[in-house]
Amino acid sequence: MKNKYQVNNKGFYGEYGGAYIPEMLYPNIKELEKSYKVIMESNDFRKELNKLLQDYVGRPTPLYYANRLSKYYKADIYLKREDLCHTGAHKINNALGQILLAKKLKKTRIIAETGAGQHGVAVATACALMGMTCFVYMGVIDIERQEPNVSRMKLLGAKVIPVNSGSKTLKDATNEAIRDWINHPKDTHYIIGSVVGPHPYPDMVAKFQAIISEEIKKQITENPTHIIACIGGGSNAIGAFYHFLEDKDVKLIGVEAAGKGVNTTSTAATLAVGSQGVLHACMTKLMQTADGQVMEPYSISAGLDYPGIGPQHAFLQQKGRVKYYSVTDYEALNAAHFLSRREGIIPALESAHALAYLNKMDIKPTDKIIVNLSGRGDKDLINLTKTVQ
Ligand SMILES: *Cc1c(COP(=O)(O)O)cnc(C)c1O
Image 1 (cartoon, rainbow, N blue to C red):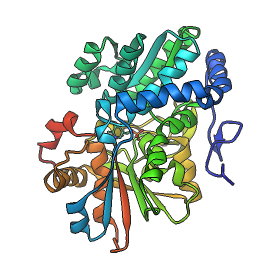
Image 2: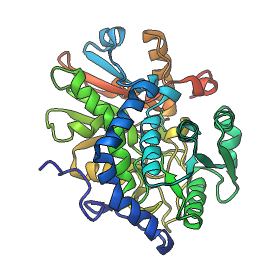
Image 3: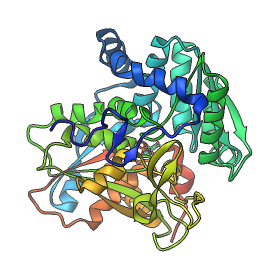
Image 4: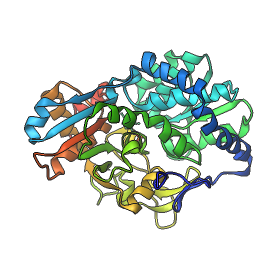
């Protein structure tokens, strides 16, 4: 029963997941698959990671009772403050976990892909901390539009490698990172930034992010009625849901980026408009044309601008355990402004999608709602001060 929503021993969540990899990656993936659970469950590893999460990241992050938000919505609203993590978002939880794992596997060279640069910054940070060489693949279009994060990565000592192929954005950067890994199978670990990619990544990243719901469980005296989180690949959401998946009394809600609307071509709401297929080596749902070409996604928030979604989410939707909705740029932007003025917290545009869903709910006075505030809005100031229709 306990594993009803978790990966099976073949690496699948129902029909989703798996490892659709080129033969040359087989040894790398096998090595990881064989060792990740053993390492993650060892006392040594847990001690070392917990210490870093506490002293370096600043965990546990508070579960904040948002007083003025609660008054407005006439219910209890709590914010899980991942925005207070070192580097500004939940991504560091996974980056630190994986870097320690890489160390145990005696890897010396780290590669990663990044779109908005948030995952790249988290990985560059972890590499600086551990004295590891760091290469971050990034599309040239993203390098232009995410300049502050490019500078951050360089300051932290990472090499940012521009990717010129395809649409020059995240999915192309991911392809290049995979290619690099094939060429450096012995000394290199590839740190994927969300619950996507070939097995065991979705499960491994979910386990590193599960610290979010593990803390929530300790911070509450009774279960919330709802937990809401935004979905790019789905890692902050899985982290916030993980220890509540078997608690039927808790409604779990994932919010995708509708962009300019799910009826337009400018959207990133994968579960709303996508269909089944293989993306980045796993069976999942993705946005694709009738002839199977991956569609270019769009969202005002770079962290949600991904044409796929983690296989576990595709499964949780199919099982009906998690409900998925979407929120437009405009709605997210309004929610970000509202939280800033109402609580003095400027959220990341990604997290603002989760907040915006509050306006679409039929809220009862007895509701206790937790919104996972995945990150802070410093990186989004330019977009936050734009007006969008
Ligand atoms: C990257 C990012 C996301 C989206 O990634 P998930 O894997 O879906 O969590 C959400 N919020 C913030 C702040 C991010 O940086």
